[in-house]
Image 1 (cartoon, rainbow, N blue to C red):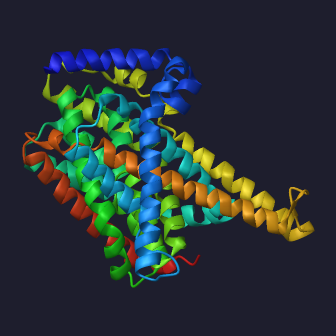
Image 2: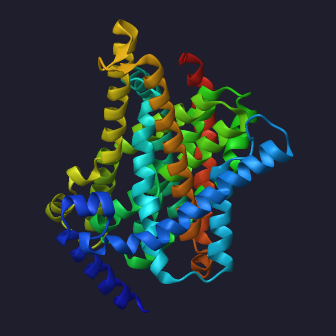
Image 3: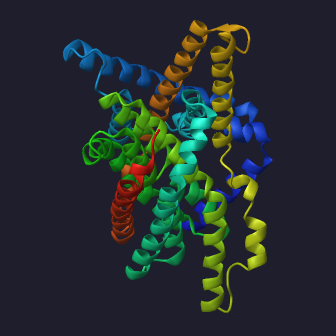
Length: 406
């Protein structure tokens, strides 16, 4: 398939997405009459997730004798997904379910994670973590843009890698691509760069975080939340960290830090789009986009991550329930303290299982053969950017993390 055919296919998919209702687009990602197409891939991933949980318990508890398995089911499912998808030739009809798990189930899992914290704790940590998030975002944008220019890569490709590195990985790239008229291959390059380094970070960073911060879950969570690119990768790495050392606070901190970082899409993506267009206007008499066209393409409403709002609402739900238990011994006036605690545990377990499914979907959606032939320079930009942001994040957390008491 040539680039013209790819662009035509992309336009058709965009038109189909526009024709879907808000519920269809936000909840399922497909029209109602195609919901059944989700099931084969989703069932496949659920079975893989169940197998991963069983393997985690069998290896960690049965064979190794631990009370709680130190082997993360999230990591097992991710690795099994990568192996299966890159060794076997899976049928294409499973892809719809794989995409649903990565895009929709992941977000549901994040929303349910809100049950772990009261809304006051969320805002406290979020506000304190903002300086570190800002330092890392600004550094990522500047470093990535500089590296891209030094290696003489296309400006649009540099813009995509910059927003993907600084904000929220693939989501930021997909949101930025149409507003700067990025080519299909440029978007694919950027997604490949973010994906491959994010997968490496998901596997390696949880172990690094434990040792460089001496097991401090707050600093480790801040570092994971600011140094890893994509939301799924941050959550996966944080879950591995929490599973390996039974430090669930690290998961809470990493999740909130990443959600705070995601909200900066509202500012960074329009800003990068305008800067890109101004450079085009200066260097070309026939700029591909005018500033008025950019304004019409950048829809702020579409840049607000809805799952962040869902996370906050669930945190409010937890706070109201806790208040009832602490004052009249009943959550919402009807749920006993014991039942409320059991309900929270169910929410937590269900959210954890959803993340196992989502990370399995990430593995099953990653085809390493697509990374061949992309050239080495975009990956050098991604490599040096990832390493640089990891170092900047480490320094920021080391200096400012001492101020955070949680």
